[in-house]
Image 1 (spheres, rainbow, N blue to C red):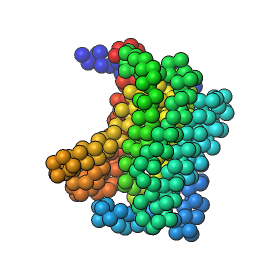
Image 2: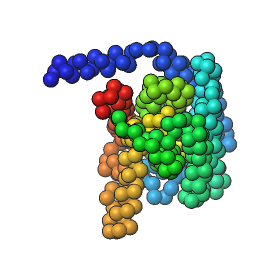
Image 3: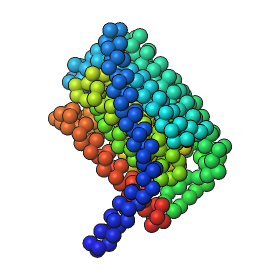
Image 4: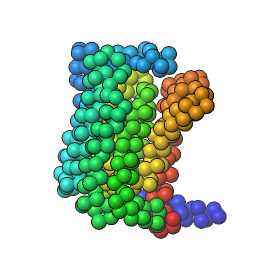
Length: 348
């Protein structure tokens, strides 16, 4: 039993270290994006402070969140700027600036514009009420159609959904799944962005895992872009760690979440996204469970949803919640990589 485990771990490490060139551009992309995000952050935060562009806290939020009122928001602007610039440079260096990568970056821009519109309405209205739920959802679905149509047209396996060694050609049903994945990821990440450093720290591991999986799956452009997101989030964490100097706002969370779903669709690792984005899935499920329970029984399952607020109200400090959730995201990334290894080896 022990020898089998040792043999498995040895082969796993050997697989991760083979063809190191796959990882070199991912490392370059990560570092470049992190540096750019740090450089862009300082002047942009100063600009927000001068213009008094700050966050408005909902009345239903935990009492401790009242002190966050007025914190500069729309930090997603410099996150996305760092991602796009570093992605273009890295893709050019790797000679992978192709149609697929351009579609991914355009999708990111569209989601950024949708998120910024939501933030702008909140700032203009001096309240935490931006786009209507229906208006936001319609924009998300419309944007998700771009990468969905592209992957269906350009990839001969575009409509195939794989779970290990099982592959299912969904044909005309796949666009519905793709739009659901991209829109769902956008909303799930948006829900996670509720504590200082939470969305950034958990997102880092989700995108690092995505970068590795995409690179070894034959989608280097997807891997490079995923690495730039991880790097930008790592840089952003410097400004967003408790006590946050800036929030990414819907400008960042809707865009980054939508990008995560887009990368999974374009890189054909839709199934593994369940694990890579496991924290975001749990956050979403907590909201669904809470709303369903209250509407059907009049009782709440959690003290507050999304679930990170439940732990806050249970006495956990903000730092503890973020640390535990980030650790869970790291574990889920490791699980995703192990599953991916088993899949490509034909073991499962």
